[in-house]
Length: 393
Ligand code: PLP
Image 1 (cartoon, rainbow, N blue to C red):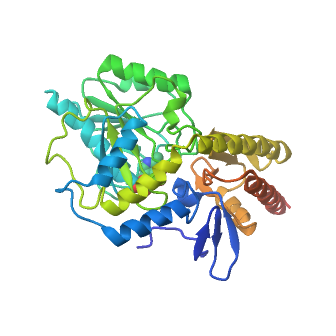
Image 2: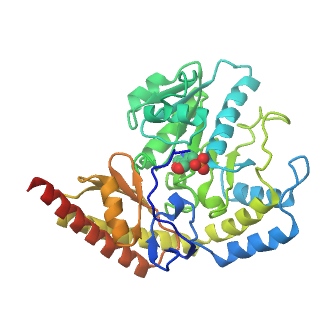
């Protein structure tokens, strides 16, 4: 189906932060499959994990015990607020599970009327019918039938609107601690703490979507950890969890998941042995403190250098946002064109809402590679300026 506005560029292989075309042209990958290849391409430990498991067992069924699933679940619960985990194949399925878990929680407590999920403008939670309704972005909803009941949107950052939206039918608040597609907007730490408090006061569950901003991207294992005491009740993760292999998960406290009983939910593939082997290998790398140190060092360098570009190219770079290695650069010139200028310099970056481009490099990007990316960005700024000036002339 023609659902993607693809660029004709194709790649044959990847290694670390490099992607190579069939004729050997190298590109520096600072989008990492949109925050998926967090450990770079062809990471030896992930490659080995796939090979070893592929020779043993790919798939059984969730009617059997899957030891790898228990190990990865334990690893996730050991490192988070959560007690229980449901494995999926994608981010949007993790969001589906989060929404179902929240509604079932209230239903099990004798409050079946509590179905409303409050979301925020500019959010992105995936492409299933529930996820597009939760995001509320009109362009993703158009043509797919009536908007579903039970989904409410409030403006991002509008505390009063949020408080006013909470009522007797509210089930949960769903938020990305750092918005990804929406233009790399980070929720201030005190607001996450405020959200936690508000949820505690009203009996509403707090759901974080850490599909893009989680698993080390901001320099802590999860983005909400920057705001002490702002743990969610439920959290959706995916992307980096499989390092490029499709693995997602919905994490919850035992209390929040108390409505989820045998038969409440399921997935044929979710949590299969092959996926779990890769997920385990990825998690073993993602929890390493030295990886987080690298994220903070490289992110600091990028932020400083891109601020320099903003000073020198105020006609191109308007703002720098995000957190850690989820970096948004808001532009004065069209972001799609800027992505092409970057590609012309053999640098891959992602687009984003609010006319941003996003840098989402592998978390193990070296400082030398970051320097190379900044030089390419500088040349892309020059090209964007030249194009804008040519249009005026
Ligand atoms: N939530 C967020 C914050 C995302 O960035 C994405 C994907 O970009 C999703 C949900 C959906 O994940 P998937 O495309 O794996 O279904």
